[in-house]
Image (cartoon, one colour):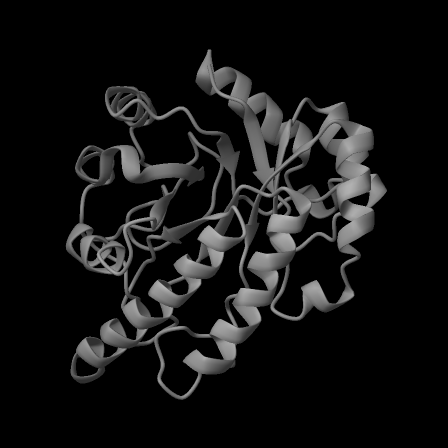
Length: 260
């Protein structure tokens, strides 16, 4: 039904990681590293390994979760956009189709929200133009709590910044709006996913079935809007399963059970 993918979730894309993806039938990779991780990544070697192991480099998650990375804060937006532009360019060179962007950091007060939304939209316009020039699609991710993009209305505002912007739907981020309504409302602007489950209290990044999401309803809604992208997990994993952590084998087994 769908190609199965997984975010690297902080793991460097080494040969060991590509080998594990192929071993477990995970055909697509989203490169997602810590904010400073891309400085240590060998982009050319990563592209070579992807070809050698037959793994599609589907997407790259632009840096997030850092006090110095935020496209919505006027004091940080300029340096963040400059860094994102370079990673978008490198993604295009590697043939990566999507770059995923967080529209803000947090917390955001009610007083600051309007100003940060305006700053985020200005940043998104610039980044979308760079993405278009490099053959990349910029996908805005919905976010939880006080972040920008935490509602359907917020997402519409963010997407209005540029006609080429699309959506990365993170299934475990919405805490007020209904995930099924989100899918039906954003429709064909959803081009990629971050698949995981949660308890509707906060993001959890559990495997589907471990939380409260109605997965048959999610799949039905995605089918109704003709989603044809990758079924891409964003769950923390270990290559060896130490300390009882889930592994890529668990991710693959979950996908096959769910999509069957």
